[in-house]
Image (cartoon, rainbow, N blue to C red):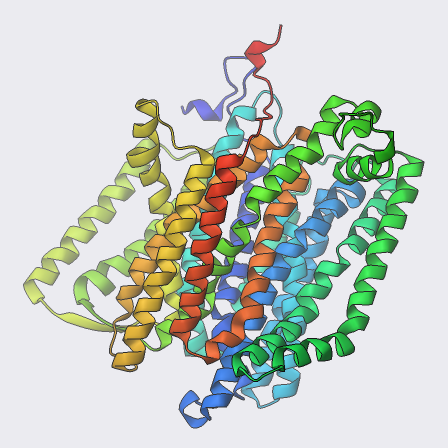
Length: 636
């Protein structure tokens, strides 16, 4: 019998996964499929919607350019919202309602968002363009709220399931999470563009909605098996925390909501090169948008007021508390004392260490937003580039349709079943696993023999959005390769690659990736549509995915170790805000596409090169401290 099916012989160690883990992992896989599935066709659908579903060849150049710019803006503002709402959702769960209730509640909002997108697809197909656009924006807002609300809760809910006896399994579970996210993204990126072309937007948006409904059902089915930690402080104090935080976030919502129109007006004025055009546009923006700025400022001040009320009821020692206390009591500093001295005396040394540590990390990470501005374009402008490339492949017929596709589906189904049996503490025997792998291998050899005998080829036409499947595929390949070929050899030589160095290299690679797509685009513009093969995009996809692993995975690790325990949540929130700011930047600069897509890519390659240089300078000057849990063996 497998050891995992029995309690460990060591009474202080339990090698079984908690009973709620299969439901949480199943929920995550289905939810990620739903999110990446709808996101992968979003840009293509929006472009068609803003063209009134007319063929691109049938509309004028200006109308086509306007539609592409608007589709880019909406796509990236949606992604900005997805990474903005976790800041609010996390506080709602931790401080007021608890993680289980928040996940279940926002899951229904998420499902409603997918339903609205499917309705928008149906309305568009029947010619109701105005209603289709309204339903689309409503659906995107609901999906952003749902996805953003779930994002900070799920990983924390996983950690809540473990005790000291099985805490050694947490690393494995998060590895499973990262795998299941990319697994779902890979298949969603391949399937939904096909559904969009074959059955239309109604089905293509509806299938991810069905997956989200399944995700919600899976999560609900595990309701009696979860460990549910109560929110702290909960009650009225928790409600005040949530309301204050929501009001403090309003200025960011204003930037996301109306900032694009402001930026577009100013950017287009700059592109016109008319004397005084920029100044006139700025004056017009101030005259027409001051109300939004005032509303954001008023909401922010109201948030500070609610926070002050909350502090009078029960003072905490969070980031904002320590920062405001130090500011209000700055006159109490003695000669030679730093800004944080009053807080150090009031809250204690550990609490006062938090805000300066957070601010040091924020300064270093300020350039990471530019990375996300480039990375997330593989769902928008890179799809636009692929539309102008040769998408036809000639593949070995027997190997492609006789083995690769069905074997991939069969292997995925077996792998999923194996995974869930494993985390349910009932893993299949090694004999079964080897038997399935051998059968797939024999099947492949048979297909190869048939291919060599027949020698026929098959014409396969890829869809522009399907190239994005390369990203999750490469992630699953690059992570182990970097560990085996780079990180471990350097560690054995006593020269480990430090986190900030990894991130700096990743940012440089991102600039190189965009330089490569800019060169590809210039070649496309010179040769004409359909003359450059889409497989050339494999190069920038490989570069930017390597950069993602170096920047994203490493950045989370670095932020966690450098932030004091009480400040780890605020750092995680800021990391997600980096993604928001990056996508807002793309939306702001989207009008530059009207010059040419190659120029647009070169602008971002230059911005990334500049940001990478600044990041490397900041990283060289960074002096931090690691805050880790003490090892159990070090306790006396």
